[in-house]
Length: 386
Ligand SMILES: C[S@@+](CC[C@H](N)C(=O)[O-])C[C@H]1O[C@@H](n2cnc3c(N)ncnc32)[C@H](O)[C@@H]1O
Image (cartoon, rainbow, N blue to C red; front, side, top):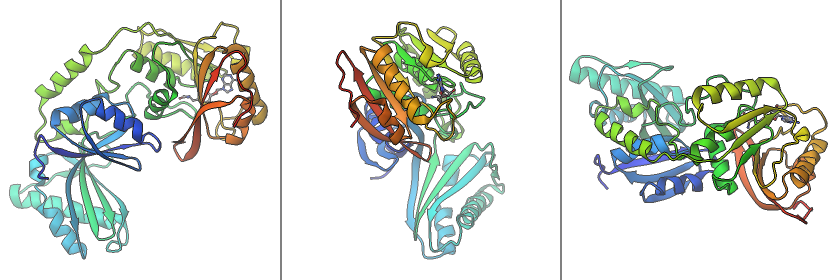
């Protein structure tokens, strides 16, 4: 299929385990998804929808525009085919560019050499046409080019997002072991939370679940105000971008959902409160400095969401098995009736929760293989973990 401005071939990327959720998100914007792969969702769309997907999806990390796929026998052929790409149609010579090469090829001993040949091809093409060249900028690029190598095949993409989309802009300082925003949003979608029931995170850290939950409940696009790489493309249409922004703003609702986070440590509580005051001042998000084992508020009929310590990165004040046993007691005694969704990277310890899961979903928190454990607490909840 020939690719035109209304027919852009896009690969969206996401964290492992969120592919189906991202597919649903993309389809909710009227897009037909072609295929779903490991960490990727592929589809065709138009420029306006590409802007919207960057601003409004919660679980994507990047949206890549496909430029070209080709075979090469050696580095010279690779250079020549890279040079055939109409780079000047995509960006102006004064832009700062960055090239990333991923994958493996027997032609290039290391990917850095492929990056250099790509840079040469782009620079030479601009020099020949304009007697000038774009500059390379690794830290703060405007145009990001990604080359995937699979032996003697290259696939070339322009990244429309730039900075990964989980960087919403509300968390400048990093807390201890925070969840990435895309994963927190994906977990909330997989948990079955209905966006109306009071959301409680008993070990909230920097509050990622609470902030992502607030954005979801109020139908606020998470990246409304952010910069995107597509804003530096030659065909960038500010008018369309503004229109999309206005449309998304008009869809914001004012939900009554309440959000409460607890944390035993003072520093994450301080950080979460700072984020709340600066970025979500109107929200009904309450951050309380407390040990979840000492919560006396009535929190039954709530939805519990948590990413407790796994016993590796974050230390707990007692042994990890006992700690998960106490999480189980907390769910059975304080959160009954109610629902809970717990992300853990410590499956052995999680058996001590002692409640039957209604659903178990495999996810990755960075490199750590995790399970999202969904529970339903009601009078006479089954007590065996399976
Ligand atoms: C993995 S972190 C949670 C990160 C959080 N989801 C975020 O995105 O920032 C676990 C948190 O549990 C907190 N914690 C550990 N024991 C606790 C307890 N007994 N009561 C409340 N919070 C506790 C830690 O202080 C830490 O912030």
